[in-house]
Image 1 (cartoon, rainbow, N blue to C red):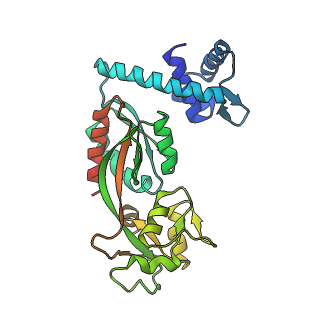
Image 2 (image 1 turned 90 degrees about the horizontal axis):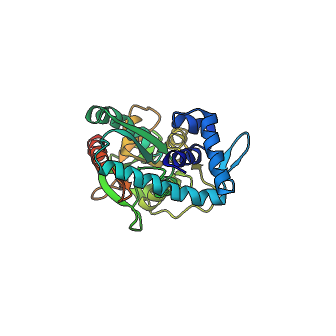
Image 3 (image 1 turned 90 degrees about the vertical axis):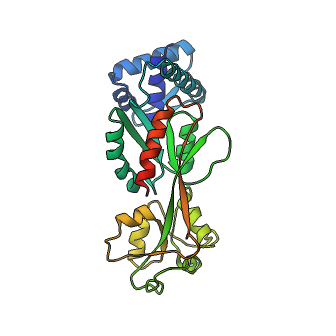
Length: 292
């Protein structure tokens, strides 16, 4: 058993596919599959369930993967400590929530490439709970989220405060106002599906309880905005997303009332043991500038 084989296991678990895992590891699929099979034979039990369409870890595989992730992370830390690897070079896997990634990351890639040309950013987009879980399992190096976390196993770098704007149909009763009271949106507020942090933030900002009856449970901001354009209701949109859609004629955006309006704090979270903090510091600085 060696670190290379452990990296193969982690790649299969991440991609849920032997071919894609082999490509990520820059080896042939027969080579990767053979090494995984040899390791399973040595342990005397399968680590993955396999069909022609999917691959999933067995219960033993889940336990082995947790140890493998720790072993690989510690090995990477040793290499970094020895100075054999530039902390600003190589891949950096970053989780990002869907209500942030499409609007923030295009502003980040260019400046980050100019600042750290040898750093390769690899994105994984998912809900907050999913990216945090992958971060804790050492399948991600860091994550961009917009909610506070409980526990001491992760650390966060505050990046920037992002305001919310009301998104309204042009003929809505509130569209003529220059500033909209959040509570006035409660009666026809459209929200994202369960699991999206923006859903809870929007309901809290508008003092609306979780709707028990029929309501739209969209999985993307794009769907919400198209429903607003069709006259189905109103929603709250983060400022970066509103900037992208500012030219639309079928949706109007208005700032919210209150001392500072409703909003969210965007954070970069990571494990305190991550071996390349200079890479996260550089990424955080670029994102702070991009989020202004």
